[in-house]
Length: 402
Image (cartoon, rainbow, N blue to C red):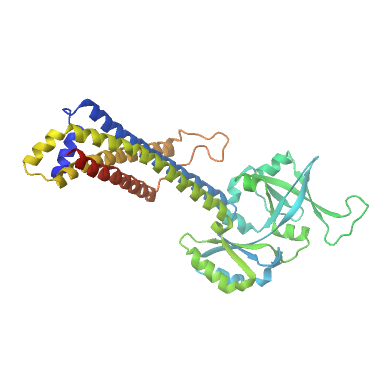
């Protein structure tokens, strides 16, 4: 066994050492351990939230969305559907048209975005599985159906009842209509039946009402017009490669964006918050490492006699410095190891049993996800701080007192 490490280990766990020095050393271990545990838990919590956000956005937004550079809509015939589906990695293709409309139910009304979608949209997003009240229904010849966000249904005081048809008025301004003194003359009104209420998150629940694409095209008098083409990619697809191929096929008249680019601010904010928190907790770790300096100072002063004996046996100053440096690193790494074990254990308990619950939230309990890259980052920062907190004080103190 390496001599400096062996002696350092004996100093740390020896019962013959002065009681106060032992207490301070184990306080140092505890401080490093608590800070490391906090890093593991907090970063895993941010990972859980990020995954939850990605899951929620994937329930509505496609993997890739194609829109026109100029104008809100474009003719669906201008898109080479066959060429797009032939691209390696593309699994589903669907078209949509969206615009703002006024929705009225009983004496309540609210403004929302009406989005017309094909049935493929539900295959892409799995949104039909998130309908918690009522069910998703396909249009019939006589009836058009709506799926409302929870927030919109709440604004309309609308509750799905299987025994009655909840008929909603969909009102939009007439295209090219001049001002009229006759009430309602300037607006076009159609009726549709609310069949389901979905719940994803406030960003979607308070904004969108879903209907069939033909119904929305007829309502807005935009035959063959769409707002976007939405694609779902295969699990092993190369997103960057697919996007590049789409851009080459479509040219400069269309914008191609991935789901991450559509919600770039959300994802960047989550990532920034995570690493800012990491830096703050790392600063706390730096403060905790001052205990190591205190422990080493007292240990060096206490072990002057042992150092003298070692020197008479042939030990040089370099070996003495290595001894106390090893002591500091033992304190640091033992704290890091204990902190990682405890942090991992607490995260596992939360993942398995959901002790920290979120009443009335989107999920039943606080999401946690552990990633190996976080553990590597945590160990690296703890190790780096440990080296700084051990090496420089040891060099200075051994020169001064020994």
